[in-house]
Amino acid sequence: MNIRRIFDIELSPSLPYFVTTFSIFFIIISPNLFSDGMFMDGIFYAAISNNLANGFGTFWDLFLTSTLSPNFKGHPPLAFGIQSIFFRLIGESFYVERIYSLFTFFVSSLFITGIWCEINHKKYRKLAWLPLLIWFTIPIVSWSYSNNILENTMDVFVCLSVLLYIRGTKKNSLILLLFSGVMLALGVLTKGLVSLFPISILLWYFILFRDKTSKVYFTNSFIYILGILLPFVIMFLTFPKSYISLKEYVNVQIIGSFKNVQTKDYRFWIVWRLIQELLPILIVVLIFTVFKKRFFCENYSSWFLIFLALGLSAVVPIMISLKQSGFYIVPSLPFIAISFALLLKKNVFTLTEKFEITKMGYKFFYPLSLLFLLLSIFLNFSFANTIQRDHDLLHDVHKIIAEVPKYSTISITKNMHKNWSAHGYFQRYGNISLDDKNTTMHPYLLMKKSNTCSLKYEKVNLDLKLYSLYKKL
Image 1 (cartoon, rainbow, N blue to C red):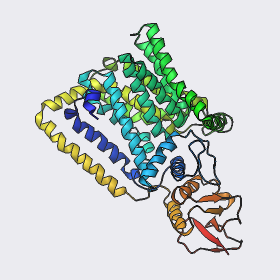
Image 2 (cartoon, one colour):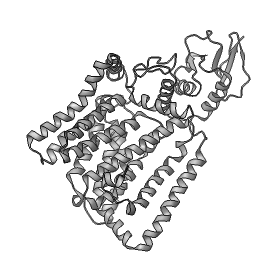
Image 3 (cartoon, one colour):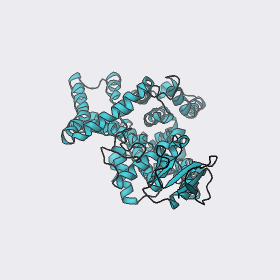
Image 4 (cartoon, rainbow, N blue to C red):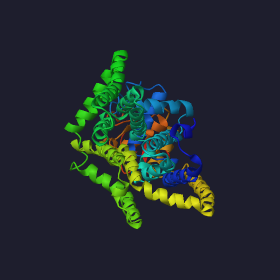
């Protein structure tokens, strides 16, 4: 693939900036990227994908454990299906979900670069590293790519959809607009209806550009929306089970979240979390503009407003429900990062131009960028195979799965049922399910160390930190 030909970007002067930018990302993420232990949702998603790769469950009928969501309907299946391919190709190592997350990171980075090159004049295209730097220095971004969340895959589809829409509109290509809509359909199959927020670009583009006749605009919009709907029509007619599966997902996850689930006390929590995540870059933008004695209006563009509105379109609708989490804002951040980069581009361009004129300074930056790269590689190797999260739990899980046969079910006590991470780790690493309903049914029983066993089990001599494992007499 000739990146320069596709994006019309001069890579030579930009290369040290790109190298430094990606090195900074890998330095930030190094403690968690190749270490063991993940956020609960990421463990579940890896377990489901691994199960699918091993023939447990099907694409439209996912399987978590035999006792917890044996018919998993919490999310649409596409991300699990794609990740299961990585498990088939690589194996069951805990590196698989990390490699998959890195894959989605690089693909999303490619599409963000493409968007930047589409909306900027040629001289600014060599700053394509700038939105990337802003994007993954937002704290929640590095967290998301080390915790295997579905938003990582969703980012790929929404970014590609926006890229295809912009390029299709510029080239008056109905095929590109159709495929832009198809990408949103794939986003829905990844994370559900929240993936449809890029549709708002139709409104923002119409308001801020007006460079098309009404007939052309409405034709383009029709083709775009047709691209979203057509895959579902074909899918429902070809695979009737897909309709049943997605209907169950809507009932469980969407309708259920309005009726039964409340994780926050007030609806504006998600907006406040977005402000917290963006606070560092907001401060940098303010300092940069004040220092350079330039105001925002000098960097104003319609594209800035479009991408800021696009990012907010991904966050504001979440306020409808009180089921909110910090990582729900992740899909908005590539577009908000692009908007901030558009604010800074003239100032940064001026600085880089001065830097390139001074040959000695520019020559010094090449080895410095390579030094950052080597440092990022060293740090990632240093943290590899360590445990950065759930240390005691993972210690016990690995000890127990070495004792208990694969594909077993272990009895647990009622007070352990809501330890969701334990369910995930046992399934992910040992294909072992935990059952709190049939305490005496299974050959093994797991209890907290503080509890005593009065049943007909004998204690297994294992060096455990949180639990005690018993085997039926």
